[in-house]
Every structure is written in structure tokens, then in C-alpha cells.
Length: 307
Image 1 (tube, rainbow, N blue to C red):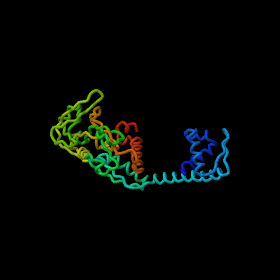
Image 2 (spheres, helix red, strand yellow):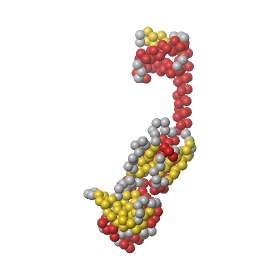
Image 3 (tube, one colour):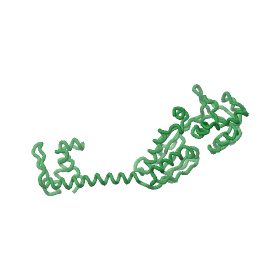
Image 4 (cartoon, rainbow, N blue to C red):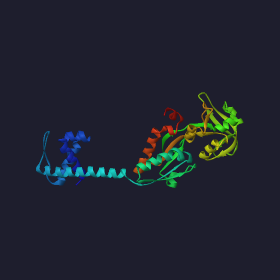
């Protein structure tokens, strides 16, 4: 005997007949009639009396409906309990992210997440190299776009403008550059893997985008150290807004050549599959996505001004 037929029988009785149940369940009336007939055959007794449009339960039908109703309530309660249990699903999530966003906005958001979901444990590995989520067993990654691997699912979190900054002490000693061309006469600190020496930045304003060459007095591949070097008066650098936001507010760094911006990095959450995703991972993705929308000021210079 198919227990689904018990649930359908309860729906037919509560709807008041086959026609009403057909509309409610969006199932053809003929299908419901066949299921009802099969149920009566399996049960070995007539459950309803159908005369045209009238629908009346037999004595056996009344007894069967009571049991079917109890089954329906049991299924509903079990589904609710399982759903609540899934919401409380614990376990460990492995996440990787670049050092800079991991040490700034991502760390703040993850601290809030584990307070809200103390049953979920997160292992966060900060590295500026791109890791293979499949091979190295990561559930989630924060990456700077554009996305290249089409086998991964990517959800955009936001973006952060790259701006030129220097310390007040440096600017007092060497002066303010009035145009990007003057960067070649200043001490500039570059970020990345290329060697110190001749370097360039691509800068854009409302009218044009242009590459400007300069001599790299120092190269650093760690964004936080890069910022500290500039705060100490070592020179000028181009850095994402989210890294220097607090320093701009405190006055330890100043935004220079304000009409010019560097390439704007975009941040994405990247994961391997959408189907059969553990609920703990779904909770984290939804939490970080929501935070990125409500706290854009942590990332974007324009959003910070609006705030």
C-alpha cells in the first residue's frame, strides 16, 4: 500500500471532493480518482460513496480518514523538526581568501557569523595564491575577479576602488603631485610579484584611461605591510579603499590625485556546486552576501561617502 495515497485521501476529504482536491493539488481529477480506487482495492473496503457531485464517507472511510489525518500531521511535524535540525546543522567549513580582504572586512563578517551560528566551525586559510577547491578540499573561496574557471559557481560580493595615497609627512617633505605624470619624480611603492625598478600604474578619470610609468623604490607583496610602509613616509602607493579606509579617516594617510582611480577589483564568493549543498555552507554564503550588501561602505569609497 502506497502511503502517498493516504495523504492524497486526506486531501480529498478535506477539500470536499475530487474536483476541489484536483484544483488544490494541481493534479488531474482522473488521476486522483484512480489513486482513490487503488487505495480502496488495497484496503479491501469502499471508503467513499460517489453519486454525481456528492461525496460521502463510508464508516470505513471515516476510520481510514482519521488514520490518514494522523499520518499527515506526523509527516508535517517530522518535516518541521528535520528542517529545524538542518538549520542547526553543525560541522566544519573550509574557506580560503586572499590576505588583504581576509584581514579586513571578511574577518569582521566571519566573527559575526560564528556568534550567530556557534555550532558551525570555520577553518579560514589566508593565501594570495589561487587554490584548487576540488583538489584541496575547500568548501568556499573569496576571490578577486574576473572569474576564469567556468566550472565554479561565483557570486559577486562587491568591489573596492584602488586609490593613490601617501602620508602627511611624506607630502610635507616631497610635495603633492599635481598630475599622474609627476609620479615619476616621486618615491612609489608597488604591490605584487614584479621586481623593484621600472613599474607602471593604469589610472582612469572620467575622460581617459592611461598607463603612467614610475620608478618603484620598493616592492611589497603584502597589502597590510604596503600600507604601513606608506604610513611611515616611505612613499606613494596605489591601494584598495577597503585597506586604507580607517587610515584615511584617522588622517594617517591622505588620498591624492583624487580624480584618478586604478583598476577596481571585484570580490566573488566561489564554490563548487549548487545542488546538495550542506546547509551550513548555504547559511555562510547567504550571510556573507547579505553583509556585503548592507555594509558596502566597508568596501566602496562611494558607499562610504553616502554613509
